[in-house]
Image (cartoon, rainbow, N blue to C red; front, side, top):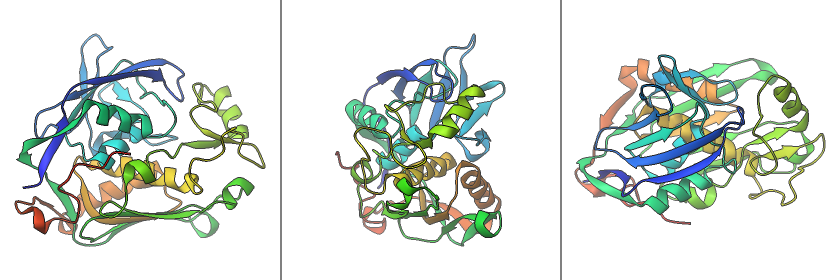
Length: 307
């Protein structure tokens, strides 16, 4: 049987929010089977739980925000991506502010936290959402066209293409394919950082955003080049970060996907619309388990490899 997974012990980190600039304490705790991933605003007068689901997403501008009543948490996608990449099903995330700390701008620090706490199997079947019919959402026309799609696939693969008219981006790979059965999330995707342009950062800061951003937690570019002294971590780091984000956004379903995700210039908004469209099409998916591990996609029964 392919079993659910949680942490062996708790682990913590302290950082700042990318947009708020606020100090944030984050504690990851084991959770019982079928809990899912639940963010907990422990700084409020009464602790508020925010279970992760496609419908808990209430804002997708610049990051993915989730809410429950008046309580909210922003920029959840990098931690959710790490959970998806390592196959963590059940987790309590205690947080002391309304934004997940950005740490180094990638999912690598969250991967380190999860692996250092240890991941263990639980005595309950892992439930997958298996896509049985193609589902697609589109936006814009012509040069502004964007789309995202889920199609049937015995496994989980992601294909993403970006289209930035910028010298630093043009010189790198702008299309990436990643397959969970074949590739290593920790090695191939997790270290890709979020990126931005100096002109946009300046505008955002005037509007009270990107207050915690800097060269230590993002790739920053002027009109011509990357400004970070160490350059890029991957030759195609820009599009790999979009894969990283997409994995986090797709994991908002609350269960791992068995599907082929593909996208062109998609982002948090379109990714969430894709999930909502999928859920509305009850004939296009089903929940499955694997009592016989041999019937599952290759590698899905094992814990994720370390770095």
